[in-house]
Length: 101
Length: 161
Image 1 (cartoon, rainbow over the protein chains, first blue to last red):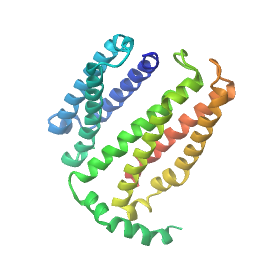
Image 2: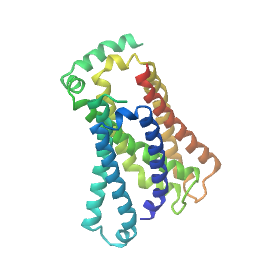
Image 3: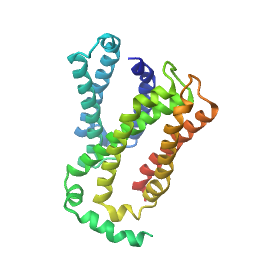
Image 4: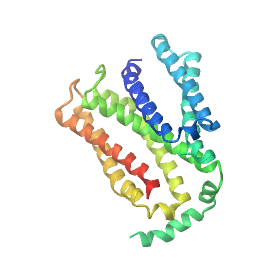
């Protein structure tokens, strides 16, 4: 938990940078990106991933107090990892399927 | 030098797996996924460790403790990013080996950054004993971050050449 708390500020700083640069890239071709299904899927997956990150950050103190990690904590972690890797997959698929970027 | 590598590159990209990656719709993005996921782990752990070494942010753990905690995931990330990178390279080896940005990335910046990384990890056993790190450690951490940013810059330039 102590470690996680140290990492959270960097995590959200990095996320802010990713969103900013992502937005700038989006504006270069917004008319093509916006209707694209793969791009929209990526935005949805990122939204879910951010929600999972917020939930985990909120619960981490409680989970850190447990002597062994609960099934809920482990499930949340797996879901979070799957969603973030899913974001990367959706990102690389934009170029592969739609030819954008 | 690259003339002697060309036969090897041609052989690589004609292997069944490299051809599969290059020609299938799903193969290439999937290998990119492996490369970028490994990269996230590799660079993420490096960033957290070096930022602690530089001394910005929370200091409830020493730099040594942070490096120790992250060591396994750092090198797991490395193995993953190298595997993905090798597979990506193999798919189009003859093209990559001639690309100036790729040659700068893999021939110059990655070896430099990697050697420096191992040096910093090793030296942090001493540097990371105290809550406040020595000035030389902060400089070393900063240099490492800049080197890896250089690797990423070289990598994103590859499509431009």
